[in-house]
Length: 230
Image (cartoon, rainbow, N blue to C red):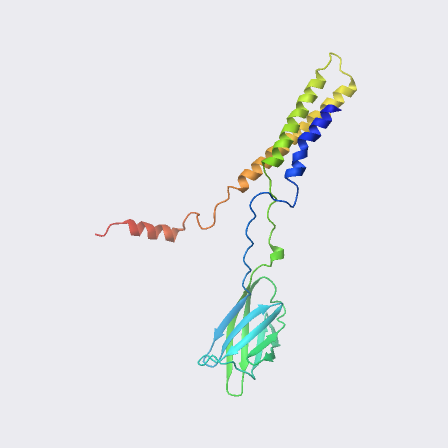
C-alpha cells in the first residue's frame, strides 16, 4: 500500500501544475479583430462600396467627383445567380440579405445601378475568410511539469514490478499478477511521458512566419544585386 501512496504523490504535480485550462507561462496576446469583408467598384457616375456586416451586405453609393452620397438609386445585386434588390436605409446607404455571402470563399457579384439619369453595370469580388468557429483550435499545452512526474511514476512502477517478481524463489500467482500490472502501468507511463516531451519540443520548434526560405524570385533578385557591374 505504501508504494501506491508514493506513486500517487509523484503523480500529484500533474494535477496541481498542469491542469487543463490554466497556463503558468506568458499569455499570448489576443489576435486583432479581422476587418469585415468588403469591396469597392467605381464607374463614371457612382462609387459603390460594399461591406458584409452581421450577415447583411451594406452598400454605400457616392459620387466619384464630389464624394457626396447618392440617394434614390435602385441597386440589383446578382449573388451566385440570384438577383436581389437592395433596400434603402439612409441617404446613400442600401442593404440586402445576400443569401450565401456568409460562406467562406470568393463571391463574384454583378451589380446593376439604376437612376433617372443613367444605368451602370459593376462587377466585384467579395472575399469572405473562414470564420473563427472553423479554425482549428490550438494544441493543448504540454510541458515538463506534466511529463516528469509521469516518467518517475512509471520508472518506479517498473522497478516495483521487477522487485515483486524476484521477491521469492516461488512467487505466488498474486505476486506475478501484481508485477505484470505494475510493469504495464510503468511502460504506459514512460511511453506517454516520452510522447509528451517529444510533442512539446516539436511544437516550440515551429518556423517563425516571414523567416522561411525565400522564393525563387527573391533568390534571383538577391543574386543579381550581388553581381558586380561590368
